[in-house]
Image (cartoon, rainbow, N blue to C red; front, side, top):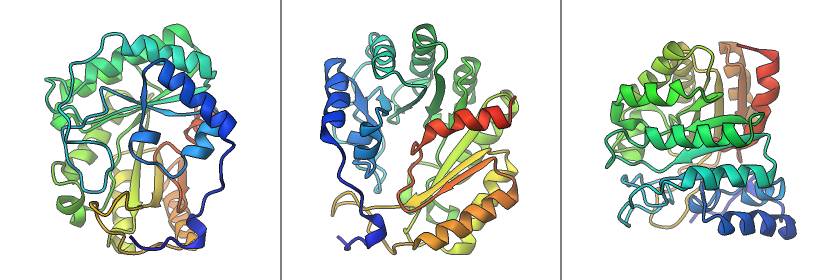
Length: 289
């Protein structure tokens, strides 16, 4: 694995706080994408008392070569107690903003849409002032399932683009670039009051012009919020890092994104889709719907 540059080094977290978050997650038998996907920001986020909950997992039905989530285990039946346990965690962690994501569950008729709805409802019932962001898979293009999720009115509908169109077959072999754009466009049309969001990884061999084209495509379908971060190779079995992008390039992409009209662009080497996601609460005050 390539040696990381200095700008990708993270500070050691305060493990007392991290341990408290982990204890709550273990006590309630919950998974987080922070742990399952080996996120580099896990220390900072856990230290701040935040986590991105991974429902219906941790086994995924897809084998994306960039992702560290397990795809070799057989997916298990949905646990009807998971939404309530998740809501309890949100309450115990005193979260103002919660991100709920999932593995791909292509084995389920609705791709897991009903599970997202039950989690949204459980959190709303327990913590009515907490804003809710759902980071969903592409649902295999099942737009009725998308409608089911949007009908529960999450505050933010997030679906990651991940990479540029040319690299989709290499990076996301079971996904489609145009389907991702269509999901975001339909979300905006079906639920204009829900903020839409997407994320892109860099360092996989894309060009600057391809990144800018992807950003333009996302803005053209009404995407409100964009995150751009450096891809990091989880293990030797995963895709190689083709290049480490310097911080000033992320600054240039942020400025370009803002010029396109995104309400917010979070771009830095360590940015991930849910990094500082709670900032959307301030965004909602500035741009109410």
